Length: 478
Image (cartoon, rainbow, N blue to C red; front, top):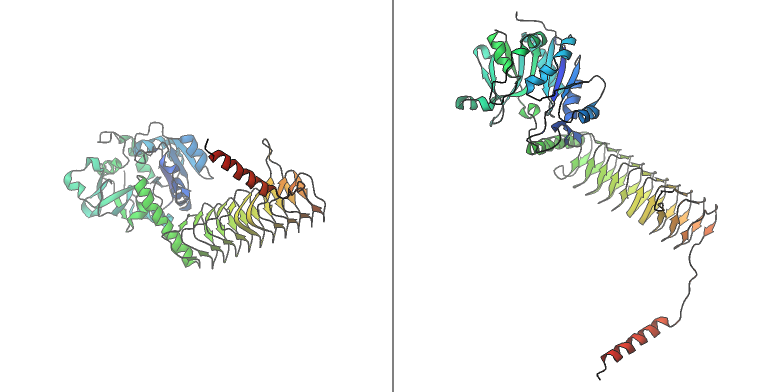
């Protein structure tokens, strides 16, 4: 096959994600493990699609249906590798799709390199186009290269072979340049020689890297594209490496936010997921956790050890220490906690106060409303400027079904009241402290639901006398 010198850098992408996470000691495939709030497979997939390929496929095998459902998106096809007999076998499984796509090059990616960038992939594919290589390997140099395939170079710096560590001689094991497992192929050369792969190696698998040796036998050029930042191209092989990469991602995220105008008092003790967004002049204090798809507006304050997950906070919101906010919306100027719990479906209005040991679930709390102490608001619609006293409970569950509570604007609910749903408290009404209400309250009314108080004068004194007399009788000797 003649050498090519075309500068056409168009390419397709094949992501290898079929294997079981053997070194993770897990029943789940590696790409479904969580890394800094996102799935491991999302990182490579987003990078691959962001590099603008003409066609894109993911090879699946273990937990194939779950992987398909999880990563399905426009422009991505799925190919099943039924036996999982190596990386070469994965590409063989994709042959029919590769033949249909007219891209000059095929970029083969591992599914567990979360720090990889689209810029590197584009440079790699351009390198292949400019050099006319049959294959270009993305390589790096490691001080401790154990576990990685070694790059054996020949005359002119070309790659003669990629030797997996199990197949290395003692001399080859001292080579510091290693393969990332990411290769860019001339599509025609790949398809012509793919069937020459065999499983005659220590792994007893069809290894894609063996094509390098095959290409050399056919006098086809194989070159390297080295990257200086090793962490960008190395995969996550076990949970120790997963933790190391997570630290890198979280540190980068913290630095990105700080450069964007956010104060993070101590990034080492603060946990911020990769997808989190925080507005300028906000402050995140030590021990805080911002997780999932959380969004914070400008000038927010998150006090120590607050936990916010998949929630949206407006400008100037304060979340005090030890509060938990999950799947909730909080409008501008509101104050949450300390020790508050906003459960999924909580919507808190502007300038509202949700105080210590207050729990809100699937409820809307109006602007300026205050529930400052020891309260449960579940399945409730609470209007504006409502005062909810300490110890108030919306009794929303009858043992079989949940029922709603509606509290209109400018209502005063006295401390220790039980509102038995379904119930409506009308606009401007008052609920006397200690009431248990089971009926609607009209606008501008006072509702009392207490039992009649009875005072038994001297009852406690007589009780003490009886107890003293009984004690004396019990201690008398016969």
